[in-house]
Length: 380
Image (cartoon, rainbow, N blue to C red; front, side, top):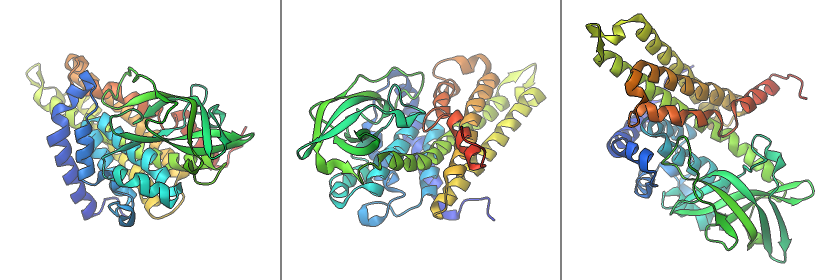
């Protein structure tokens, strides 16, 4: 039984941390304020091989493992959650469905640019009336000769409207009780990307609503087997929940580091505020949260790498880590006092970024439902 990552993983962590601190951290506040999409840094992450981490070399990947991806997401998220989710969604929601369910022609057409960070892909599942109840989607697609004709809309889709978005894979009803996955290339006629949302957090991340109005794509754009779309996306979400947990670990780690530094350098009543047990104990609580969240996250990643079932472990990790991250930002802001409430403060940015971690890739309530079902409890 091991409770530490391998030397190779820790060496890789240092590479990503150096990159994040040197190239992302200095401009993260600027993105948060002005919300430009940093295409050049997505390309740089591609140069480091981050988008290809868990995919084999024979398709252009790095031949690494899922644990390495979690390490990268944690370290990027430690300095900027927006870039962390761009990486997480680009790999877990954009590339993974194509790699796992796509045919040879689809992989050849899209993977080369996606794996190198020269393009991004989105994952179109959520709708206005189909979030936690993902099976309630209303977007429809029917075959007209050799083309799928798609009508409907999607909501809250990450990486769907960036300057380098190449496609969005969507779920649509293709029959009476049938949901399928279809690849829709960017720029397709009838595929409308709505203006970007004004969000509470993740300001540097790209998020749009999508509309499909008699949008036509070739019948060969069906991803995998017809009628298996819902099952494909559920499998994709299991992996995504581990990755979101890693993003939450990065945020909680940042809160711990900023809080300890502030408690050491900020003086009140003639001594560092960290000398007061009220502050010291809060920092201790942060350490406990970080350690627990990290252990749960990397346990789930190790199960994934070992080819073992991860649904339960992924839900546990995502639930605990995301809620710990939200608590960590509240504690860190309290420790910083007024300075933590001022825009431009990292903890203020993290405070706004944290809440979505309890919502995306399945809400905390959904995770508790998954966990309780895994315990064998009755299902209503």
